[in-house]
Amino acid sequence: GVKAGLKRTYSSVTQDLLEVSKMPQWKPLLYAVAFLHTTVQERRKFGPLGWNIPYEFNQADFTASVQFVQNHLNNVDIKHGVNWSCVRYMLGEVQYGGRVTDDLDKALLNTYARVWFGEHMFSEKFCFYKDYVIPRGKTVEDYLQYIEQLPVVDTPEVFGLHPNADITYQTNLANETLSTIASIQPKDSSSGEGETREAVVLRLAHEMLEKLPSDYNPHEVKAQLQKMGAIQPINIFLRQEIDRMQHVISRVRTTLTDLKLAIDGRACVQVNMRDIEGTSRASFVPLSRGEIKQWSAFGRGEDPQHLFNIFVCQHAPQLLGFLTAMRQETTRMNSAKGWALDSVVLHNEVTKMLKEDVVGPPPADIGGVYIYGLYLEGAGWDRRNSKLIESPPKV
Image (cartoon, rainbow, N blue to C red; front, side):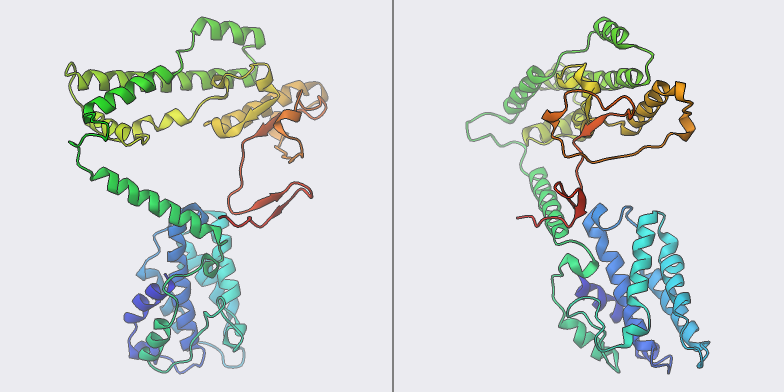
């Protein structure tokens, strides 16, 4: 948390560093940089909610930032004061921003620099968040005593995140803990029903094989695509999805079959077989079978004709390919109007319709497709007013 991060940072701050500058802005600026350093590090534990890309912010970034602030104050013009534009740019774009590659992450970092660094930070009313202020101390011990009074557990709002972010973090942490506990359980124990470990895994493998869908018939797939127009971009994408899905089905079937043979002693036990055996018994999805979640739209048992009116995007692993095929399809439909593929851009409109309300494709003059299955992370949607809102609190 913030308390631990600031304690770690100020434990390396010496009294000489605290008194290296006689400028009154020095000590508050030093603390503000330390708070920024702790914040950018703490946001990493929230995963994609904290940073789109996990960056390795470290002590070198803090040291370089402090050195810059010190040099800037030493060379400051008394008449003009601190050049805050320079300070914000160096912190948000160079010292910490130099590691950031995502545009939205950089915008967030620059927002921290803009809100926390300026003449307003010396006001008594200034705070990073409620009860998180800049202490007025003369010694390192004074700052450490103030830091000791900070809460041990911080609300995500301290870092500019929604309170729901903490629920997501705690859930992921609990799942990781349970996975670790499950992985160190004895492997030779039997279940409550008296089944041996091998019998449980064998039964689960047999049940999974029964639930596994049958292979696609290549002749039927080809005939169906020919009927719908095999050279249309959307149908080409559909064929690629079918091939990917067939690869997943074949891989899962082969893996489970080999696992059964290995348990019966008719095949060699490979390294990945041991992982699959353990995760199957614990009802987890092993890494080598994670692809089974990426079901193609065609393989979900829905009416093929209806698929071209409405798509579920969360089951299409190659979403970019789908959107590209849709652009090509729409451009081809409007070629008589002089449409060119490189000038066609995607436009999204959130409707108030439910999936059941869709009975046909969008109007021909508009083109495109209806999609569903998308979800927002870090925001909510007001269907009545068709606008983004704050996330509703989770239980």
